[in-house]
Amino acid sequence: MSTQQAPAAIAIVGAGPCGLTLARLLEQHGGIDYVVYDRDESATSNTAGGSLDLHPATGQRALQDAGLFDDFKRVARYEDTLFTILDTQGVQHLRIGEGRDAPEIDRLQLRQILLASVPEGKIRWGHALAGVEVDDATGKPVLNFANGSRVAGFKLVVGTDGAWSKVRSLITPSKPQYTGKSYIETRIRPENPLYALASSVLGRGSTAAIGNRHGIFAQKQGDASYRLYLGFETPEHGLRAGGAYDISTPAAAEATRQSLLTDEHYGTWADTYRQFIGQATDFRSWTLNSLPLAALLAEEGGWTHRAGVTLAGDAAHLAPPNGEGVNLAMTDSLDLAGRIIQWAELAEGERSEEALDRAVREYEAVMIPRGAKSIGEGKMMMDPMFAEDHRPFVDLLNSFVAAAMAEHAPNGDAH
View 1: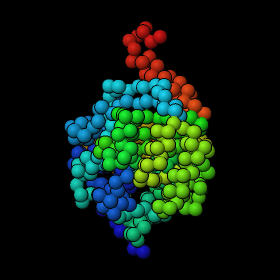
View 2: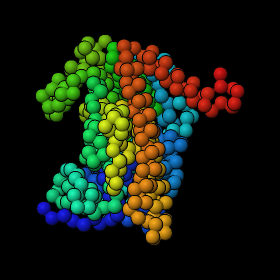
View 3: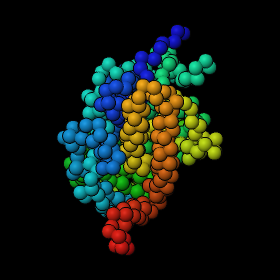
């Protein structure tokens, strides 16, 4: 297999929010040559993903610096900041978030905003990364793609390729670990006979109904539909073809639906929830995984800095759901882009690969503690989210609210 010379100084592997934010920020500078590789066949071939809430100091700040905040505001749903916790019988126990500056946006809408800001020629579609290696002669990474192409010679490769990052193997041997919990995702669209009931019960924003070590987590989407995530404990193989919760064929999905309606799962829940499960469509399943904290700790055989390579977003610090994932990913991109831009603005004699490596080390020094904190917080939230009843999750969120109020209270008033 012949090796192609790198078409740019910097390779970004993965065109999700993290990779595209980094690309946009580098594009704004104008003097930094980069290329983005993505496994999707085209800009329109991936429509998956739910709703994201972007926070002022992280995701929103990245969009502001990228010059895309006005585009974001045009589609952001400031009315969907509510978060409600209910029990298995539909009784409400907590409602927070009214007026919070963390508007929702569909993942697809965010991706479209970012894609429109990056020149088409900078993105190489149909490039699923099959593996990476280090060239013995140069010490630089070589990218091997599933389409048969092989590219080497980059000054920096940034892995923004998500949970199952292939770039990660150059930095840490750690791999995502299954948490023991999984989601089966479903939809209730406006044309569904139960849509009026869903709108009445679920309303604006997001809801979490918790009990019996199960959860039903709902999000209102930009097209007014609802995504429902049915969360429960199962062996990892349970979601595979032939497993207890196989949805790979219409017949298997229907059998899984009926299993979810038994007393082992949601059979004792309020009739409303059972109706939702009975009539929901678009089944999709996924496991909840997390990198171990050791993945980020050099002293535990985890993160080993390697010149010419780094990671951002889930590739660096995949965590269980904690409401921070995309925000931290975009913050990683903002931090890394800032340091790359500082390197690019050095005088020609100072703009060496060693200087670029120092810039990457500075980025990793702030990213790693941030990522470790996110993994810890995600793991802390898992048990309350899948508790015997709603109370542990209510207590946890109330503690978050109290901490936020204390942080922003005037001196002497935090009590």
